[in-house]
Picture (cartoon, rainbow, N blue to C red):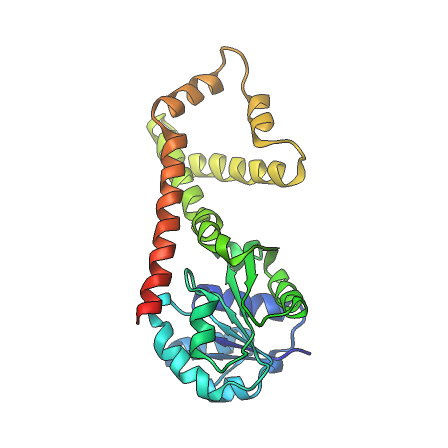
Length: 270
């Protein structure tokens, strides 16, 4: 069994731990590094996984998953580099950080795979995009795909596309939550109780997402199937277009892409 160490145990880190245990990974083949004692006790009790320091985590693991905030990466790499064994695969879940940043800070030849996951990992429905660094092999990419497959779907992309992935699917759940929030508010404005409006919209969102996944039809076709001539839906679509919702979404995703690029550059300057 592949031994995995997780550096950082926030929401994404814990979701990965939980998914790996649920998929059959033995807890004794998992360790995590976490600075806060109360969080250590919480995760150990919940998942049966041991907390250790960075040298101990690296010494016993085949894969080291780095899941810290981009601004915290410099001290983590400084602690990781002297402890890393040759051939250990490093997997980065850090938004915006290029594989070159890791390769420059870690021993020469270290294989690195960059991953952009998203928060639906906590319910086993993540969308993760992976990209190899200079030294990562196809076999190692396959290992990462299998690992992340325990918590959702995985796609391979060139690293040059990772900032776009970050903007689209990494931040994407927030856009949907924002839209659902607005639709619930609209239901309240129209006289519905909040709980009823929330039930209506959340189930509609779930059903629509299921149709998108299971249908071969383009989203335009699915939308047109709901849009009757002179009906309620086309009246709503006209208002959305009038207020530039499509253009606003595109601009928002471009802004997220630009911020992802900035995070990577800022980390490289540290």
